[in-house]
Length: 466
Image (cartoon, rainbow, N blue to C red; front, side, top):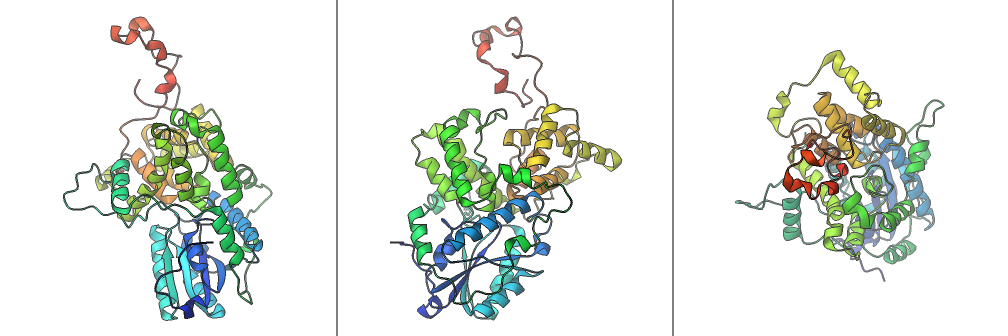
């Protein structure tokens, strides 16, 4: 029996009315979707996706992200059909106006959604609350895209737990104040919930997902195909990806995560986490419930905390996507004019002459993907060697990455540009060292000579430590 409790303080009269569940670009799934679970107690449930290109702005869904979002929505609609439900899609300039209209058409008693935690989404969600209050419809906001709500942690006076904006103090604060992350419901419970869920007697008008102005491919080049070949975006694909990584890469992640030359050195789950076709809570407990020792699983587990930390930063510094967090770094003298454009264009098209940088940037353009270690190399190259403002790199990544996340992306670019909370104190080299070993043994100090053969160049490759 599905045991999730209905929302508190809602009278039975409202539960007997239809509930609208809003899907966005960060929660495109049925399993462990808190808003959907809460709405499931209503007599009728109407899944809705409202699309406004205008509301996306420069840091919303653009470029490559549009491709995987559209695929995820198509697959979500197909999944809903298995339970005699459908995804109602509307398109316009103002999503709050669309929401008002659909509530009136369906005589909805409540609207549920999962918070997106971005600067733009807070403005949009405030408009939703205002509109719904005007028409006497309940609004219920949930949290399903992160392990913790970034608004929840608080710093008490006299905090001495380390640098508040870095990973481990943030992790410890969340666990102390909020407890461990919520465990997801069982997949069997999701199945039973959907089996019992009923749509309205008459469905409201809807556009097909394919008819929405998302990832409209013009011309003869099907540039979306390599992206979808590599990253098909559905819940089933997400689970298959996760299971394959746990079978082939998870046990070696602690050792191999910086390797760009082997398969499954990283999970490739970031796109599914960004779109929401995979629950971060499900992934977190698959890690924690594994039989790996803590020291062999800790780094991968902490990657999910990094996501939350990035949104904590974005909440604290809403302008961080294009303005230095450390404001005095706004005075940095970056290259400008024609020379800046020439260098930036060479970088983004993979024509710098440095093979590691160029292969990474060409892979990004073709497939929407680059492993994290190579992302760090190309970011460092743009900022430190080409002297181009990190904001231009952040914007290009946001347009071309399949997992484009404006909080995580800007946090890492801020650090690369030395203006972030956890600013880099190193430079990533764009080329490998000239030989297999750092130096001949006779040129080493005596205390080093005993273990020099164990000091593989791969241990420091990419760092300015040699």
